[in-house]
Image (cartoon, rainbow, N blue to C red):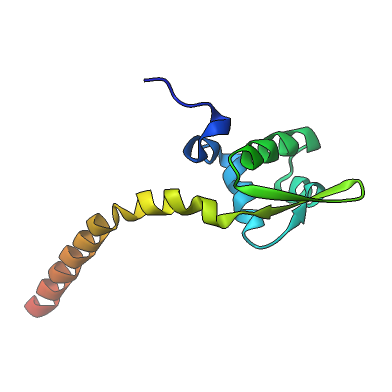
Length: 110
């Protein structure tokens, strides 16, 4: 089965490391393209390309102020990813429970 185009699917859009870095930055608040390029040491065309993809999957919104563009994270659209990852939470809980039991056994032997 062919993968969906990067611009039509949130999962594919965040698969790219630079876009995840942009999301991490925007989680702290609104930033201009210039702020993003300086912080991540990207050139402006690269940053704009990644921001365009994130905008197309509705993970970021843009606000124009004169010639500048300011981007905000649309965090609620990360919910499908959160829900998917949380479907594996029981695996971690089970592992931590087993680890706790093992550690308790080790302490009991001392």
